[in-house]
Length: 323
Image (tube, rainbow, N blue to C red; front, side, top):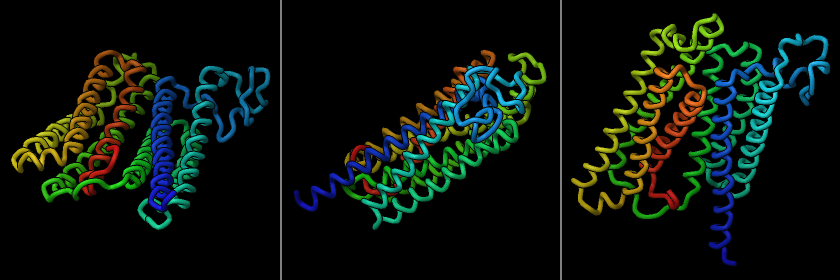
C-alpha cells in the first residue's frame, strides 16, 4: 500500500467517526427535546445520580429516605435517565473523535484544536446539565444548555467538513461574498433558538400555574413576538440566499453556476428547513402546543443551523468531496 493510499484510508476512517459522532449528537438534541416536551426534565431530581443511585430504583419502596415518594414517576425517571446515558455515550464518542484527530490530523490545527475544544465544551455541558437540575429547569440555564449543545454540533460539523478532500477550483469572489450573509443567518438562527427556549420556559411556567394549554402561549408576550419575527427573518434570508446563488451564478455564466451547484443545493436545503420551522411554529401556536410538534420544532432548528454552518464552510473552501 502506498503512502497516498494509507492517507486516504486514515482520512476515511476519521470522516466516518466524525460523521457518526455528529449524527449521534443531533439525536441527543432530539431526545433532549423529547425530555422537555414530556416534562421529564426532573424525572431524576438529583445529578449525576438518579434518586441517590447510579442505577434508578425499580419501585417507590427502594427510594432513599431523603426523597419524597411523590417525586417518583417511573416513566419520567427512565426517560431522563436514558437521556443521561445517551449524553455519556456522546461524550465518549467526541473524546474518541479527538483521539482520532490526534492520530491522523495532528498537523492540521483546525481539526485537532477544534476537536479538543469540543471535548472540553462537552465536559462543561455535562456540568451545565447538573445546574439545569439544581435550578429546576430555570429558563435561562436551559437556554445556555441548548446553545452550548448547538455550538458543539457546529464544531463537529467544522472538523467533518475540513477533513473532506478538496476537489475542483477554489470558490470565486462571487461565492466568497455569500459568507457574510450566511454568517448573519447563523447569528439570527441562534437568536431564534435562544428566544424559543425562553418562550418554552414561559409556557411551562404558565402551565404550572394552571393556565390551559391552548392559552399558555398568549401569556408569554413580547418574547413570543420576537421569536416569530426572528423565524420570518430567517425564512426571508434563506429565500434571498437561494436567489443570490441561483441568479448570481447564472449571471456569471454556466461554468460558474455549475461549479457551485453543491452550494445551491445546500441553500435549497436551508430554505426547506426554514420553511418547515415556520410551519411547525404555526402548528404549535394554533394546535395547542402539541408535544410532537415541539420536538420536531427543536430538531428542525438544530438541522437548519447545521445546514447553514456547512454552507458557510463550503463557501470559504474549495469544494469538498461528498458534500
